[in-house]
Image (cartoon, rainbow, N blue to C red):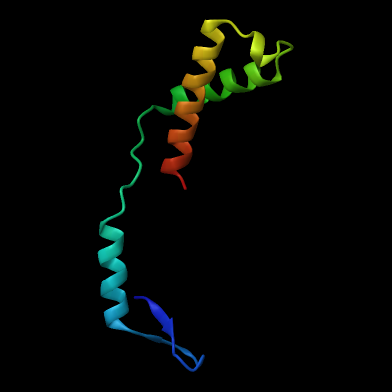
Length: 84
């Protein structure tokens, strides 16, 4: 049930037409799907933090470190999108 405010700014009341419109709009939303197991998300978090807090400037990272950074960001962002 969705409540909407009356035009005069009065109390909130139920409006079935607005409820149907809102439900129709929600059906168009593309929801994120979890792509990784919790263990992978944890590994990505550990990898991300160790890379970011490490002594090496990101501009000096090796190709492997850069690939690990990009992978960890992808996994973390997917987890965040699923839990937003």
